[in-house]
Length: 219
Image (cartoon, rainbow, N blue to C red; front, top):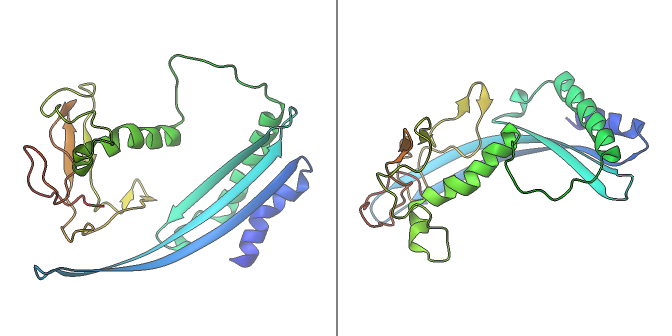
């Protein structure tokens, strides 16, 4: 992997306008133990790998513009091929060159179309955290949906399911999956929104009004 990582970062050095270009590999093996006075005794093992490529360029107006891309897999052998990553490096270099010459965006208020990966993170932040039950007891946290059970909170065309036991989707390894949550409760597939209607919250063992039991989502 040392030699492969060097090869993946090499194309950056062929472009003098790029001020920083790197590739890196991180591999972790994690073992989590959980015991409780109720008699639970759980051990969970997880191995995962991150391959990252990063580049930055100085724009014509002096600003430094960074780009990065990360690949995730449960094992290093499951990461994309060397050829695939090298193609992505070349695409990144081309995009950095375009950004170097691009005009500065003007302030704007109005609709926005988000790139798929950015949209996923955006939705996670503005919706995912706000349906975590324990947060509804903290006045300093967002309580957007606290009184919205059985009400429409999204378009009727949308249903939202959280499944922490899912390890892959469409051939892509998923980060953050687990069999048991941080309180020793088996993770459960939970449909939080059904055709736009808010049905429940992601519950830990901390009860809230109308919901007293965990559904395996303590993190």
